Image (cartoon, rainbow, N blue to C red; front, side, top):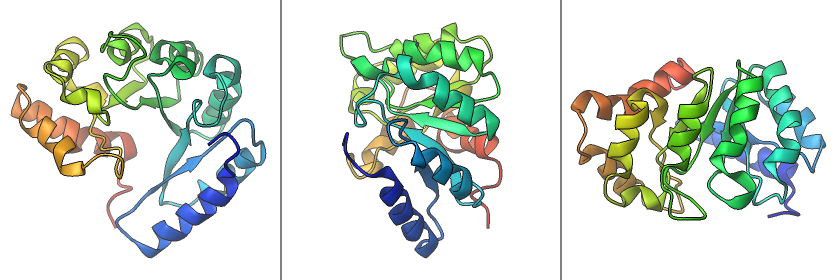
Length: 208
């Protein structure tokens, strides 16, 4: 976690992606490991890299303190940022000021429904309070299986800002997909969450 070598991890991930054409890579950036920024700038030239992944909790920093450096880097290189969110060190609302200050950066807040308290709409509130429409949430959370979380999210922010996520191998992908397929939302919204939103966000990166 905190002492993990993300540079070595990124190299290992890139090798796995190169050997499996169906895979794409998030390049991990850790502000406590400055070399990861230089590495990311090079690795993101590869068409199989989607953007950068950050994990304030695992790497032991507070996004309030390190966010400016991360988002400045992302804007400079026109990157999508995927982040773990829903813990005290990475509350969804703490990312909003950075998304507002760097409007060209697309931010995905992972783990819809995750929260250090009982408020399961923290991610939704972050989307609602952002100014530029550049914040998305993904569904990769065990909390997402609780009643009405996904349905209420769609009602409040619309399906266009929600992406399917599995958090595999932590969770069983088929279960996460079933949650979308059997949700009490329209078929059009299900298609957006499962496929169409990702195509709009990432372009043709999944088409070889």
